[in-house]
Length: 406
Image (tube, rainbow, N blue to C red; front, side, top):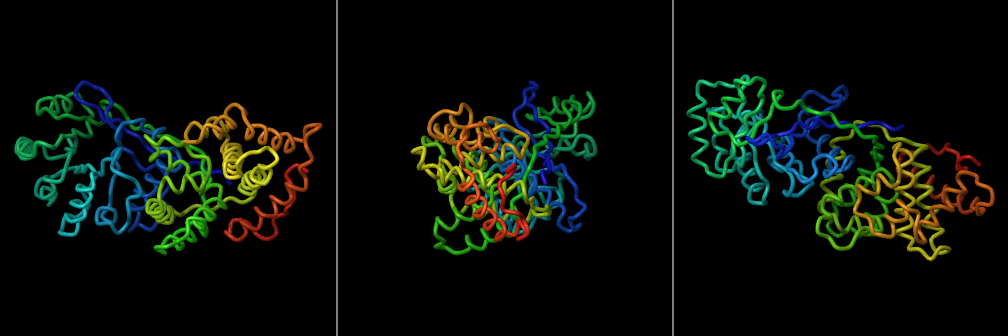
């Protein structure tokens, strides 16, 4: 089953009207989420969707993104799976400030994360956080404007803070932001949130749990982690997208799942897997993943015939198969990923040994006259894929192991 994921994106402007950042907002259903964990689920869903479904570059380019944080993330009970480079951590006004929260935010600030205080109200306890904050957001629609002079004066005692005038809906409110010299602005008077959507294939719950369990061991072999990820196409694609967010400045591009795992690092892989378990309310697809994984395995097995690297062949076949399921093209998916030149050229232009290999597999799948007889190799790949997905809980044993269209 191919689902869609959504995220809201509202621009944040400077005083000249230039978009300098985005706030990322939850867009989805809460039907299956208990009321006590809805805020945490919303935050987890935004993180997972932005970084592993869309890719942060697709959502924001090189602009920073404001992401709401609940107490679990502030205190470290749930890990942040990304670095501080492109995010601003927005502390919700519902977070009660105590020593644990102050300790958590101090550690985050020392690690390089920028902190924003959302819907700031003097006397709520959040004034204790001003020394850690880079941004203070002031509600000019429903906030108490009678104390605005005092609040701005107190915030200006901290030269590192920028004020964000939020919920601007009228020209009068924009004028207030101008009067107090608020550096950043956000609200319907400037721009309404835009909902971004993308097709999604959810990784197997059991495979995610297996990955989390494996990563709990401090000496888990890299081969085991790579094997778990490579056996679930949706999970592998998410790891590839995450690798894109940490690949800036990296000279070598990715040509295998193992290389993506190495680039992201086991610590960050563990954090993403944990977050995906928190985010888990979707059912896993079946037959579609079998097709994609079979193509990846078939390309891997045929690599020696074309004098191609098996790891690169697997990732080429994986992306090709996943693009079909996502109603996209291999070239469009490849543009979002930090792939090696040989893999990228195979997917976008059909060039090189990998391009010829992929063309042969496609020709056989489409039943073209004169295509190489790959029936035996395809059956072998499908048997492997069926066993792998059945073990992951994504296929029932009754799923037929026969080539599609044959």
